[in-house]
Length: 170
Image (cartoon, rainbow, N blue to C red; front, side, top):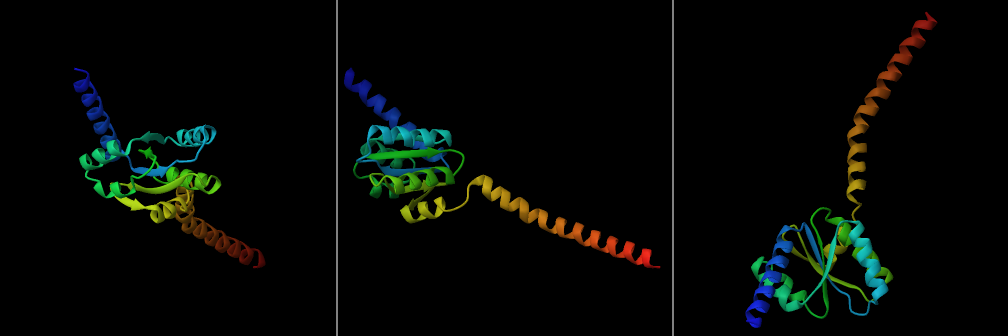
């Protein structure tokens, strides 16, 4: 009886991880070997603030989940202690937090990830982390959209001032 229960629990865990891999807009695999409890707690706190779930998982469990989620390319990166950061919303936040944390703590190694259903390596995660945040990108977009209207308003104002100046001279 106990074996059947354990097998059922593990099957549920595999299904849960596979669902998270499918549903997440970004999932980043990292090796946390060498981090102490204080550092892991700090990392979890930073990720939690950004709405990212951070889990330490067994590689065999993740391999079964990647097979279920049709992401078997990720298996090559599942060596050593594995932790995965799952983000359903912001794609950039987990990449930025993990790479910044890895710069300060050599023990954390970002290996690879899944971004919108595609397996990516560390270089692509790093490129993602170098992008501005969502708010920064929206701010840039807003300023680009406002520029033509602002320039038009300034041109109209200049024409009006020129006409007023010409009317006062006459």
